Image (cartoon, rainbow, N blue to C red; front, side, top):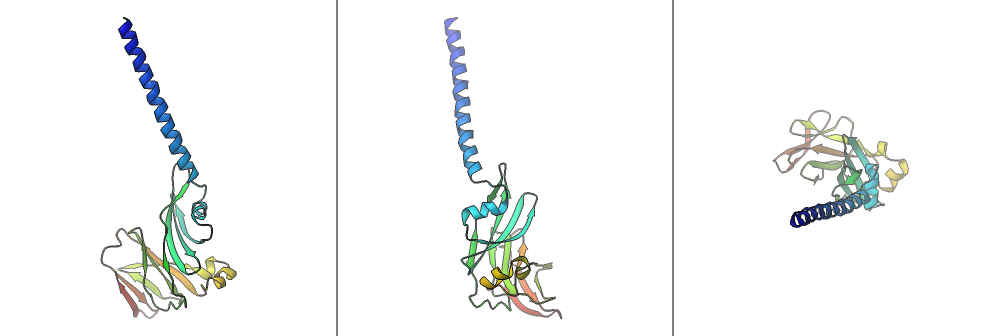
Length: 189
C-alpha cells in the first residue's frame, strides 16, 4: 500500500512539474510575442526603424503591404501580418533608387518574398505596366504623401507599380505600354 501511495505521489509531482515547465515556457513565449506585436501595422514597422517613410498599400484580412523610403534614396517593401497578440513586421527589403529620379522607363524592378514585384516610374496618364495579362497596381506618391515630403524625397510625379504573384521565379515579361498601346519598355524576369 505504501509503495502504491509513493507511486501515486510521484505521478502527481511529475504532472505538477510538467505543468510548471509548460507555464514557464508559455510565459516566456507570451512575453516575447507581446513585446514584438503592435496594435497597428505601421507601429510594427516604426519599431524596427523610426526613420522609415511609410507608404501603405493595403490592410486586408490580417495582412498589410507597405512600401517605404529608407534614407531618402532606398525604396523597399514589406508585409505585416496580424498575429494572436497584434501586428508583426516581416522582413524588410530595399534597394537604391536612381538619384536623378529619371523614371521615364521601367528602369528595373525589385522583388520581395517571392511574391511581390515592384518598381518606380514617372506617372503618365493612361500609361500601363503589364505582366502577362495583369495590370500593375499603382500608388501615386504625390497624392498619398504631403507636398513637403514629396519635395524632400524628390518624388514629384512618381508612382510605385507592383504585382503580387504566386512565384516571382517563373519566367515573366513586364511591359510598359503607352496610351496608344505601343510597348515602350520591356523587362524579362
